[in-house]
Length: 359
Ligand code: AMP
Ligand code: MG
Image (cartoon, rainbow, N blue to C red; front, side, top):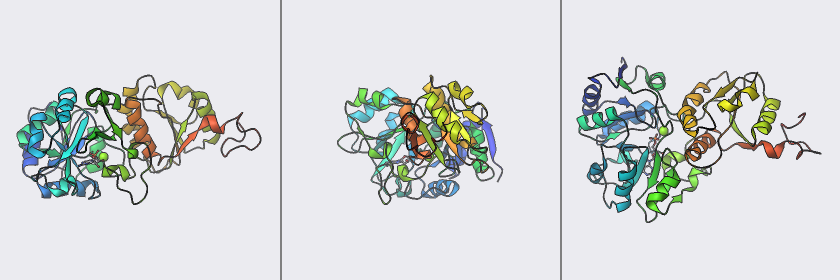
């Protein structure tokens, strides 16, 4: 199959994409979070093609992309006022809501759950594709399962060239990390995945918000988190990745001491001079967190290279979008974090912890 890449600005882009969706095919669509691999979310055969193309585990449900709050009622019931309030404030935008599903939503879309995830993306062409298709578009991130998400049309082409008929190229995704997911199907709202809409912003509307434990801690073997996708190894390059926390200087001392040719350092623009000779790769400015979220997956994909042995990564501290970046990097690191402040002198006088010798 020839994979066509059409710019979102091409006059025929939306109609061509909608025709494929209506005929049960797959289209890669741009959104402000990441690129999605879309199909008719009400057609089990079309949805099965998404799972097959991505190699996605069947128990990981998909998000339904819709045109606006007025469509929530078509696919969900028992909708609390909070859902309308959130939609009013944050849609179109990087917020997904989990609500009780109506029976028109097939089991393969919800992975058999009684709930369905819905979102209205902030991409004019993608909303136009949904509108012209006349169906909600089920779309997970377009990457092959387990790999870093796709934030450009080129990333999608890399993963699916020859396997899907069309990629709509809307340029680099602005937010760069997947949508915030909030579960409104229970009594108290619960954050299932952090993203471009921050917990602080959600609390302004909801007042109350529980942060699901799978957001910050590793999911134990055999446990199924509320967002089933959170249990899978995600976002990771092929080689081990370790997050090195602590001050710039201490982290650089720690990393430089361990660095071997073939390793890479994933850091901020501001830190590049500290890693001269260590093949550093910056994913944005620490002083501009949006630049980090926008650059993270491109950088992780560049590091997904069999020639690289080890990645040392720096992660922003704090709240807001930093919380979403921490979540993605911790998962990429399989929660392997070293605090350079703890392992470096003067704390290692006497018995030096592994890696701190000779500093
Ligand atoms: P992706 O689109 O690849 O970012 O994956 C969608 C994410 O949404 C996965 O982590 C899913 O587990 C989560 N998700 C989708 N539907 C539901 C649902 N009904 N309940 C909880 N989480 C969901
Ligand atoms: Mg994904």
